[in-house]
Amino acid sequence: MLEVVYALWRRDMIKFVRDRRQLITSLTRPFLWLLAFGFGLRASVRLPTGGTDYVSFLVPGLAAMTVLFASMFAAISIVWEREFGFLKELLVAPVPRGAIVAAKILAGSATALIEVSLMYVMWPTIRATASPLAGGGPS
Image 1 (cartoon, one colour):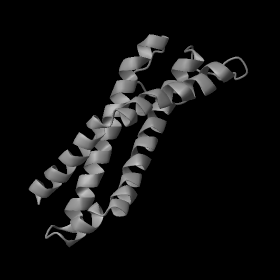
Image 2 (image 1 turned 180 degrees about the vertical axis):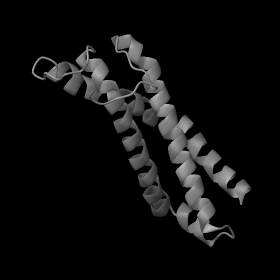
Image 3 (image 1 turned 90 degrees about the vertical axis):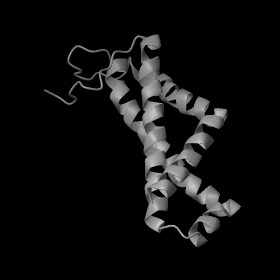
Image 4 (image 1 turned 30 degrees about the vertical axis):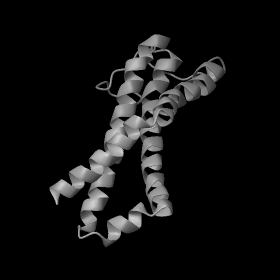
């Protein structure tokens, strides 16, 4: 069963890495949200952020939205596989269906982790400070 999970996970990861358009849009999406909400609403929104600037305050929320979009696109990929007939081939193969589900979950989680990691690497370019270990919430 682990061989099946690994093979399907590897297939999805290769597909993710080879699709440059998806990789570029997954990097630009958080910056577009940042332009709209961070720089566009910075002057009109007054929040008690505890001394941090508004853009840095948005970074954890944008990371969560990046994970949300990555998981949605992972779910949409199942629909595309159904459309092109690959899902039918998987379902008639002598593999456990739980392995198919586990591989999809692991692949979606891995792509979301890659996207969020790339996003956190890019944040210093706009001088936003964020720590993945810092606690959030009002004090």
